[in-house]
Length: 342
Image (cartoon, rainbow, N blue to C red; front, top):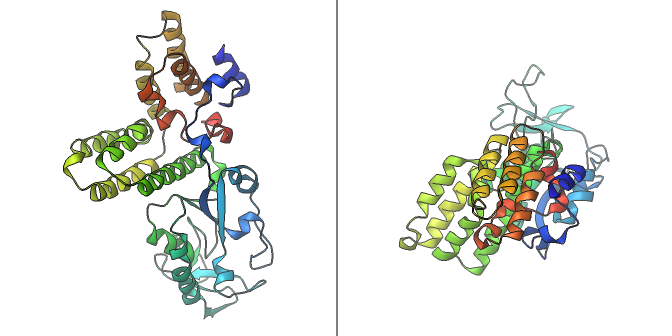
């Protein structure tokens, strides 16, 4: 049985060609994603070292074309160089040398950011190095005059500038990508961003906008049932609005909704909705089996890959053009194995 195979291998990469889909896994070109240079193994850190991430270089590099940046090197600080740290107001910290707080490099980093960021407009995501005073995205220490870290953490100077300039861009830190839920969320957003901008290249029309939403509606439902309904209402009379204005508003809310982490409860809701499209097509025992698998996922007994694989199998047997277009069934290449641990 397909169910037993999925349990045994814990992967959607079943050899059975019947469940191979043509969606995201056949993206012809790699997706451009920004990254801190040290994560690629480049020896650009203050001490001449690196923070090589095998997840990035061995797994994600198969699908992402990494665009590397080291703000400190770009700002002319050299390698090796004195370490820097953040001080002052956590909301607008200054970057200074750790051994000489009078040596302020904030302006150099900000000037580099102003020069570099306009060249990153074609990125679909960015992976930062944690704890860095230039590239840290979350919980970067900001020191007070007494030498102790402020209770409120800050954000690296370059990371702050980039996220301010591109607030919807999917961003994440290397350390947090070790968490299966955060990794899957980030990559889902990267592919959604990429697919939207590919649509924009073809020209945005009311019909194209509705078609895109039709593909992503169950993905949105898994992240935010409330936004799923709100976006549907937004597009109810799409033909009466300027597609550029409506599209910009739609994309903003789409990316904001996808930032919310999908849960076992919301995934179960989507799985049950998709199962509903099969109720007139499956035999009684098949329906029973499908329901049991979804319930085992809900209880945490099975990973998400199992019910999704089983649904894909049934939809291959019983074609439904509308469901076959749903990004939820394959939001990214199976080979990334992201749903094996969810």
